[in-house]
Length: 225
Image (cartoon, rainbow, N blue to C red; front, side, top):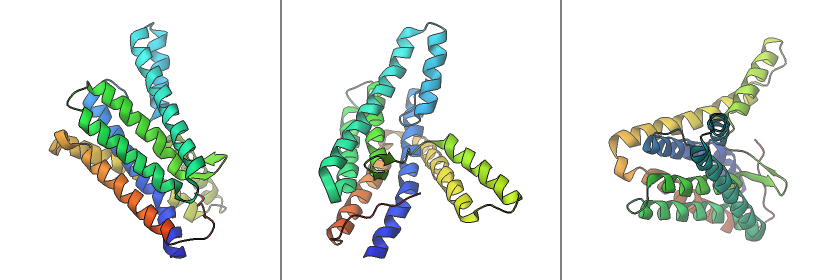
């Protein structure tokens, strides 16, 4: 069980990046106005651009998105602080609940409001990769992955690189890209059910986490990237 737990925790970053890429793609394609549900670097850049043009109503949308993402991360951290050994499962179950709420409200709210809900869920999901009380892995920090890929390629050229680490960053970036591709396919095939695939994934991950932690009674072991 310990080996199974270590394996699944090491797999989680890729699964969560895939989910984040899917949700980001779905939200972006629904809105068609440059708002992302989890890619906060892009939202921050867009906010700066529209502010430079004094487009304050649109800037307010980006400010709201960024604020909601922070609130989602804060909520996830509060769950982590209180959930102890089962916090990962509780966080992912909470993400599933938020996605269910988004699916229900999709018929009643404009999709910008739905994107706010998705943004909250994605902020919360980041805490499932919380390593310690002071350290968490930012899921959609694609720029960081690409920088590390470049650094490791440079080290490889001079014979000092870590091939395993290089492959790891390539796979992390690839998981995000595959999720975005998946979201694009979903929007082409079943746009009216676009949030169901990520909901199935988050729910499955939550159930697996609860099962693993229930059968593993020692001190929790977090995993480093």
